[in-house]
Length: 309
Image (cartoon, rainbow, N blue to C red; front, top):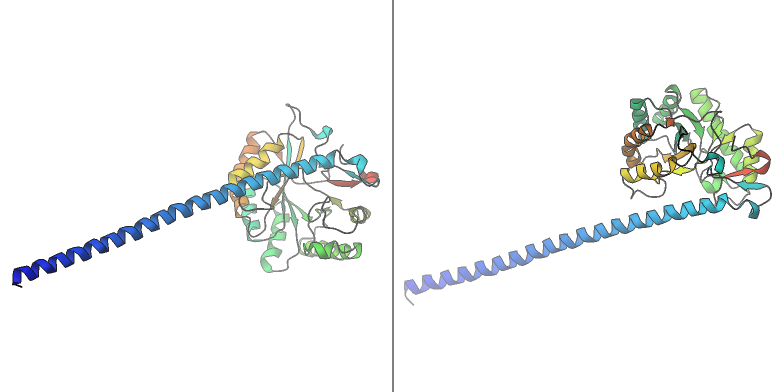
């Protein structure tokens, strides 16, 4: 074989190698692109399904609340159910709406961010706090009070199995959070929010017993009649949380809005400025819970049924 023939043969081999290499690269690239597109599609579908599930759950919660509101005659004779949706609290077109933003489960790093937003807008709110003794948490208790917000109790441990084990266990937990708030801030807190609300299905003890205990101590408990949706999932966007609140606050003269300032509630912080602006544009008064606040309670003793003025 002469030199020219050998060169031609080498060129042919190199050409075949290049073609094979290019084909392999093209196949791998196409596979990666298709895999990325498929993965993106699947992620979108999962997110979409999660949002649909959240919406269905939210609607179901509303149905349950409605069932509670109409079930007085079927419940224990000592208890009445009330979710702040009674006719007396329905808003007329010319009513000035009173909205109470409440934050559960703090303090955490998010608490400082929530306080910053509230300060930017000159808004006062209510914080139902749990028990922590680290330096940051103690500072947050003080800041809540010093900046004019209402500080309420949401149990010390927030452990349902411990808190609702018995009235004695509930009383011990209450003493811990009550004393912590007083020793840290000088405030004798008179407001309480039951973990899970007064209508929770976790307690094996009749909630009437805990309600009686709080009443005997002169402590007022508040539930909520508007939920942002940040309690059960992180799939909601900031816009979703705002929409959830705005959809319901227009229905009531008094709305107590359930939100959270625990560590993982970054979307709640993100939603807060827009929510405040929309509420203000609606002409709502944003207030901290006080002795003048209309009671919003899921369950109340028939002997203490003063939820409506």
